[in-house]
Image (cartoon, rainbow, N blue to C red):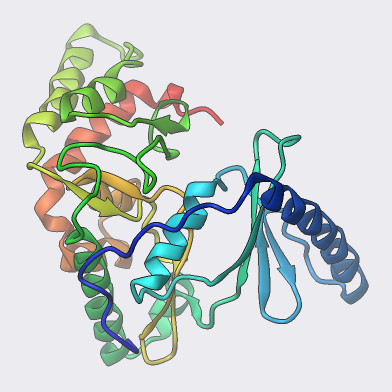
Length: 296
């Protein structure tokens, strides 16, 4: 770790003017076509969502890319986290499924999931220590939107693949948040008894929620963390789901679908996820009741 992250959240920058964003949208469209030609010429795979460019740059233009991701990335970089540097961001009103593109720097290092098995024990300890510090720092930030409001960094709706229709909020109270999550619940089980047990478990989640909201990455996965050979974290990627969530959300999101015999599960346990195992169990019940609403 090169420096300690800020203990207070930096101000959220003002978005650029819509006309400026439209201009950069045209530039980014050209860069995408340029990348397609270059990839064909040098015979390397072309990624339609994380578009490779020369000079250490990437163009992200995916289904989840929104203006809030730009602002969250800029805030976290300003706070000292190893987030990409935003060069420009453009709007594309003709592609409603992917209305924003982001030109950013490519960060050094390898994905933690690719590197972990080859890291030395000391390097693994370094990665865990820095991971815990970064998460504890952003979770200690105070929300400018109040202690209960679940919202994005701008105070508006959050985009997350974990919620119905991939969008939620802003929710002014925990009750509103949990009611929204549970609203699409339906019985797809073999018996009514199983259905009722799942409902009881899912409803228990609200009673387990601790007071307050925490600033949350929202999609902590090992492929969104970059490390060097010594285990230092060189990159935190993909802030598209970042915002103010209930305390458990960061860890229960990271634990989703992770088998207990996988190294990432143990890593998360050591990082603090063991405090949220009951919440994780309730979330699995919630998912089984509402998964059909997580449509693209």
